[in-house]
Image 1 (cartoon, rainbow over the protein chains, first blue to last red):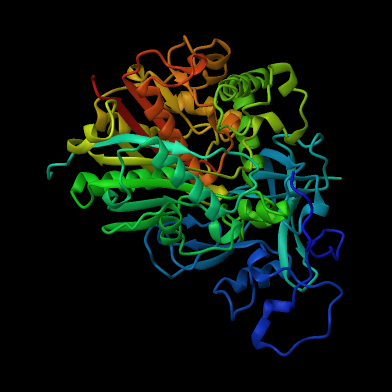
Image 2: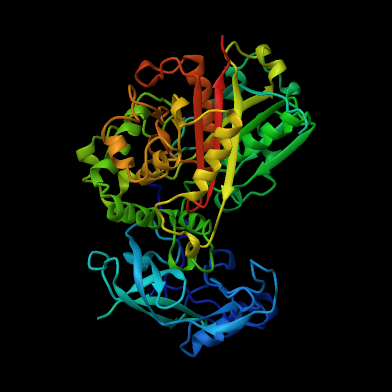
Length: 180
Length: 394
């Protein structure tokens, strides 16, 4: 395609290739922490959400995830499971929502893989598998990374589990994992 | 309902599309030059309004407030309405729809709808990040969701549910690239592809290969829309905008439903057909959003050109080719022309004007068209925009 830029993207610091960023991205407002091996991705190129209660009203989601539980909000009035978790119900517009645990198992509805054209910070992870997974027992189909399988061994209907994982800067995220 | 004025498409122009040795602003200048050369009757001072389709100039060109920048580059001083429309891959048709609404209501008489996008960057990983933040960035983009894996899942389910083959996908690509070989502004004007070659290209997001995917493209296009009372001032072959519909039913991929039943497109198409007073059987040619080969196949079905699940057979039987029932993407489509997001919908409208003017090269000219349909989708096929045009009888 086009030649490499003069300013090459920052080198990746972890096997997963997720860029190191300042914890909670306190950024300009926090005193500088000890120097890191690699510069962080600029905030506007960092895909992962800010997780702390200063930044998001969904911080309980990330607190639970850190304890190994995938959760989301429910509107009891509408008997509606939300995804992603919300602060206002899209149906009745109430903000009286409850956190509920989601099942940690599901089955692949559809999948593909990224073999080329990955976003900045994910190039080292190529090839990776992504898919839509029907969680067991709830009416939710979540999109996510599927670890633990090559794309040509994955299949529709495969049983997978939900797996929280740590980002190098202390944040946490989730993915699916295929059986070994 | 209040009386709506009739709105006519009276001309248009495009730049050369591809990996261009030109900046965003230079593309805007190029399309201004091309437009005024193509329409000598058009005076810059007569253009009262400018609608700019631009998907991600902040990401791709580090530039905001792009509508007045574009006006200046094109040599225009809009004095009624100036605005940018952003609807990712459908930003262009969105600009045309806004121009239509302005003219139909009497707020504007003569409007330019233009699309400009510069997508090829020194760092293509940054460009890919821009594409991934079209998705719900924090919940889908963070997993690495971009368009190719999403449409690959559509293809996987369509194959599973309807027996659609890789050969059918390649047939879409072959047809649209063949048309692009007769379109000098197309990104793949000089590159030839046949079905066997397409099926040997590398996989990008299985089952989709390189030839199943539209490209990252730099390019611009512009059209002029006027109140129909003024149309003959500019052309002998005005094209009337008869129907327009849109539908947005989800954004996060968790709500993408079956993947193969594009409910939103059916709704948008129904609005446009009803407004125009026609149906799928009346359409002579269609410019549809073939961002991926599978998209065109699902679009045949959702637009009513064939039944559910029959899209693969429809293309294999030549029913979307010249001589078939509806000539689909005679311009070369997104697959052959490239897909400079905000410019795509405008480029499709330029093709509509040129087909009705009878000036298209013979190898991709639709014989005596009366009705044309244009479709843009955006994001993960979660928004659909459809327009129907009628050639004004000579």
